[in-house]
Image (cartoon, rainbow over the protein chains, first blue to last red):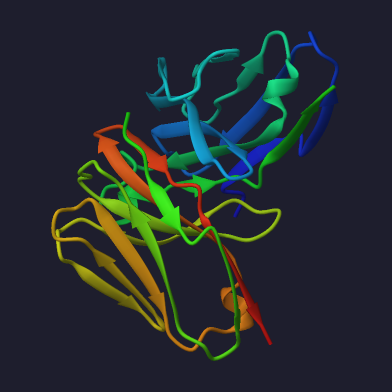
Length: 118
Length: 110
């Protein structure tokens, strides 16, 4: 049972470098999202997608791009990394819209990607 | 901007004690979820509550959604070391989004 798979698990970047965090799910979930987790601030929504070809911004989208060309994959791109983007990033998916009662509203999370920007 | 606050931020108790953690907002949510996160892992869903005043029990865990759907509580009876973790509440703000609170970090000492 793969579930939600994130790569890489750890990454160190220099300011100004670009990179892509990969996220793949094998549960045929329509909804996918990216969160960042910082100490004392919980999980903050960066971008999300309700289906292939559809993306939208969350609470903290600046500095990040996403695309959703397939149901399975939802990569997160940092075009020019900044120290403020040092964080742990989580990809999450759900069968239906998150927060709904029942199995459709459960968010399934990957194990996280720890990014350090120097 | 809708915000969720959680209290306490940190809690350290002895095995066998009872505890309650809280999730509060000035906004109304159509549903509220509780997740638990262990170090190095992603959060895992514990429960979803959708009706004001709703109470759900999951073994030693009791979840309550406030009557006005602005707050929730999680009560753990006879805490065990396996309950250690970060407890996050998440409120549904619109049909396609949930927002998370900052979490309560619980440590249960054997």
